[in-house]
Length: 141
Picture (spheres, rainbow, N blue to C red):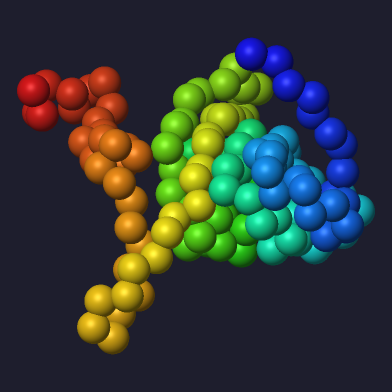
């Protein structure tokens, strides 16, 4: 299926409340060439919808010394993981020094139990917990 992709930034999300009905796609949002402010975090703060698509590097998928990668800030990635849960991640063709992925995140609902607030993630939306590299795959089979 095809859809219209609109170009914009944090201010566009503030001005157009109807965009909460659409997915927010962030493709290499934080380059930090012109500013050290995270465009990705500002967009996420202004986005009221339920689906975020992130394209680029993220924790722990990077060759960088910085474990957050070079395409979105650590603050953005922490807030994304706090408010949303990952439902899809696929590798993308990358330059040799990059480990790019496309990931899809869904806003997590919250439940109050006693004095705790917990995220509710339906079983059908939970990613597999078993992960292993090719050299250790035989250990979990």
